[in-house]
Image 1: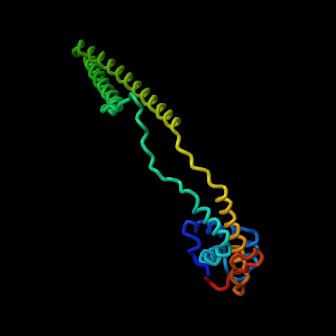
Image 2 (image 1 turned 90 degrees about the vertical axis):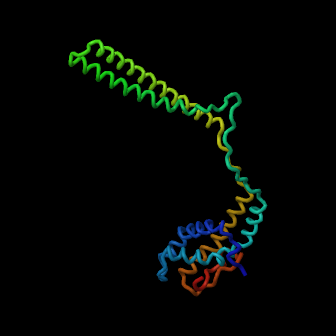
Amino acid sequence: MHDRDHVPAADDPDFARLVDRALDSEEVKDALRRSDTGLDTEALRTLALRAGAAVTATADAEYRGYLRLRTAAPAAPTVAPEPPPQQPGTPVRAGAGVLPALGVLVPALAATAAALFLLLGFGLRALGLSRRLADELVRAGFTATGVAAATALCGLLWLLVTAARNRSAAAADPLPEAPDPDPALARAHEAWQQAVLERGVIPFLLGRLDGPHREAPRPDGPAGSCPGPTGRP
């Protein structure tokens, strides 16, 4: 007697995909068009998923072979990624985060000072007051403008250099590739899926569409001798 324990929860998505493949086959589509049972695709899918134990039991031998290979296959280690090692000769500096802050703060302050100096200087000139002070303020405003432009350009260059270094480090240290699957395990998995599809799912769906009088699928029977199950699971 077969039960649902023969197909662990990890294989349930495989069975659901097999049901969808069977429902998309021309054989089942044609039977669905000719059937007068009132069942539609979604109802057939629900019935097949509920009858998973009986349907997958038709390929029990293939599943045992697949399970034996999968159990023997070494499990891939799941290790949390480690931080990149520190390069020798480049100690971490406590003030390393100060440069980005200065790259933003200094241009902003210089631009603000430049606007203030120029506004006061040209204002005094317009009013004809303190000509010497007005000239000094205008010169200070232009100087602050140059400082703002220079520091902004330096900050932009620093960001570009940092981005280029990060890209180079990422290219030099690629992520490890996943190991190739075992060919024998892949073949066993495909053989099990094909057996379930041909001996279990398709006959089950055709049996439902032909009516409730057909027999349930026989475990490990040939593809042509596996009629659909009787009654609801």
